[in-house]
Length: 349
Ligand code: SF4
Ligand code: SF4
Image 1 (tube, rainbow, N blue to C red):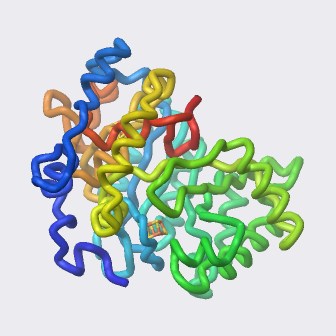
Image 2: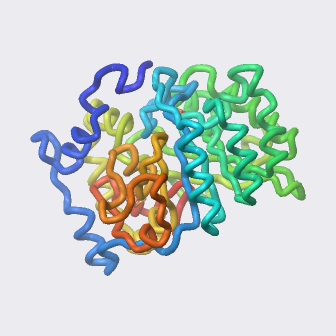
């Protein structure tokens, strides 16, 4: 399977995705603008509550090509953050008290400067999160030592595992992914991750395999814990449940399977004002592989940069201006506010 970009798909262009989301393509329905719903909740224009998380996309290159990937990542993607941009990020961070740096991709570990960058962040005293797809740990000998490297820097590992069964995991992420993921989880456990008293946090991420909302986070966590312990002896801390947002490869899937309207209706009807209060863009800033700034990872993939009244590139980073901006919204935002809410940290209510 290739990325949408390598297939020259119409949906690899963010403007086409936005046209679809706004219902002007003819074959998709038009839904109440998200901003109208926020107005009813008294939250429009949406404003930051203070930046706590610096989320960085280290590149779109990935060793997997998952069906629902909102980044459209894969081995054929060459976009990668340079060391120069990383230095600009370090400089920006050094002048702030933003406590958390969240590394994502693609597979962030594929960035050739990954280890150097983590060490530099560690020296700054930041809490580091690595969004790990697990199989990268086994992809090549040079990555086998990642669990010990993570442990050395007390990195919080957030690992995606669509389900505790082979069929559902391989269906979403590709053949053989489940077995490799289990092996990688065992290696993380051996390094102390997910074990009581080590302080080494291992969280797993679940996202639905089709056009439906995720189930209750706490209930599903119980099932994951029971099944993974029973069958594989694996332990972890928390399960984060994430709603699929209608962008990129998941949007492509929704259109191809003729589920788009029904799925959007589900999201719109499940709008939850309490979840709207807690959307992650209020305390996160997202940095693209090329140093541009976005309100969140999803806006990044739709090429919706932070509003142009504030500097839009990390080299001109201005925390005060960013804390004072209006957040850019569109119809995909319904995904963050449906049901129990969704963010990179799981449910929000
Ligand atoms: S979902 Fe994650 S692991 Fe899968 S292709 Fe996208 S970035 Fe890679
Ligand atoms: S999609 Fe991004 S901008 Fe929209 S509500 Fe979610 S986090 Fe905020």
